[in-house]
Figure 1: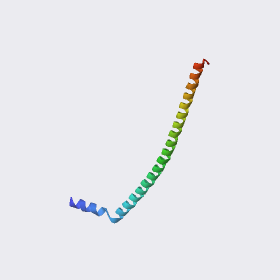
Figure 2: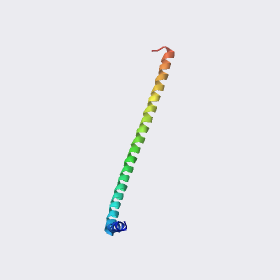
Figure 3: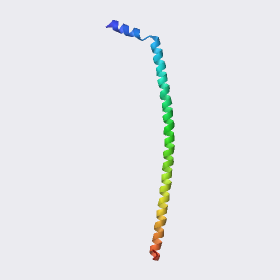
Figure 4: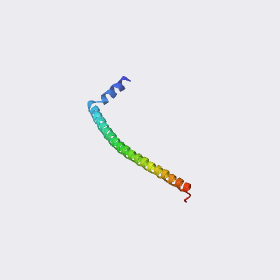
Length: 83
């Protein structure tokens, strides 16, 4: 048992650790880059969604104003007897 542990400890030499560290740094750099790209995409999506909501609110308000004006016009026509 101790021989296999000793053999395993001999397998992990400094070169393997350095290459592992280098691979880990590359993976971490890729994650950071991907996260930055994702953050940028989310920011653009949030801006577009906010613009969409503002447009929807504006159009909805415009439609409500039109309906109120139409209703008042219809009421005035009903009171005066015009069709």
